[in-house]
Image 1 (cartoon, rainbow, N blue to C red):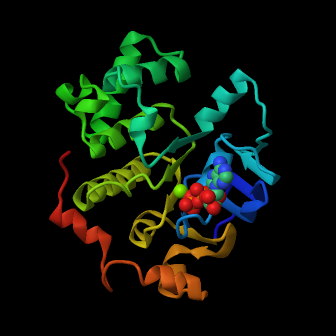
Image 2: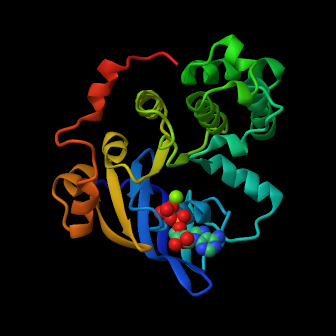
Image 3: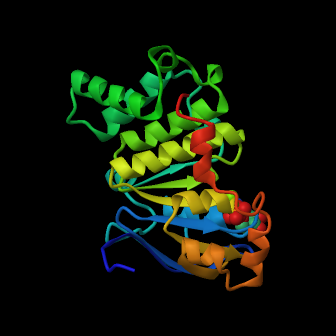
Length: 270
Ligand SMILES: Nc1ncnc2c1ncn2[C@@H]1O[C@H](COP(=O)(O)OP(=O)(O)O)[C@@H](O)[C@H]1O
Ligand SMILES: [Mg+2]
């Protein structure tokens, strides 16, 4: 472990819904440019952590520091905008968060107007070209409305929109889970490439250990709202300390299955 600065620091985080404790005493850090996986079965509290990180839920207890600053609830509009530049989120189903009347380009343009006010029209266009290239959209797709796009393409829009903000970190909450395996592999490769080309950090939430293995350095194993194990991803997955992690691991398709090989089976393209 290096002692580099952290972009996200979560300490003693708790969330109660009535009597139900959805997240309990969760502590972890994400180094700048690092990639941390949060893994666990459905209902283990993963999404609730993500929602607290981006301010969609208020923690019952504990602290969240992003970019060295405490994230207190009830921030001003200017403060929320600043926070958006630190941390973006991509959900499992981007359709619900895309405006059905907005083309890919107008969606990106809107984000750039809001978060990159220093750019003029030409500057925004150039940035939109870069973003479209990065996620593999051609000019026809860029003029399309969300309903004309496939699930994988919508997820690319959501990723491009998050990248447009140039955040320090992106939370990906089951962002590839609903996609066909081949499309999933393309998006995972895209995310790996983006990370190697930018200094962005990932918080990758998944119930799928193959996804966690491909894209994260460190992983946090959650069960019933608590952290069960945390450590270097390879070590946790190859040599699980808890029975629960062993159980999760046994759900991975086939022993020796190695996601990077998919790159050879499903090369590039949209
Ligand atoms: N808004 C809410 N109100 C009540 N209970 C909730 C709410 N959101 C999540 N929960 C409960 O909190 C627990 C954790 O949910 P969640 O964070 O969505 O888990 P995961 O993302 O790991 O599947 C679950 O038992 C879920 O039913
Ligand atoms: Mg979830």
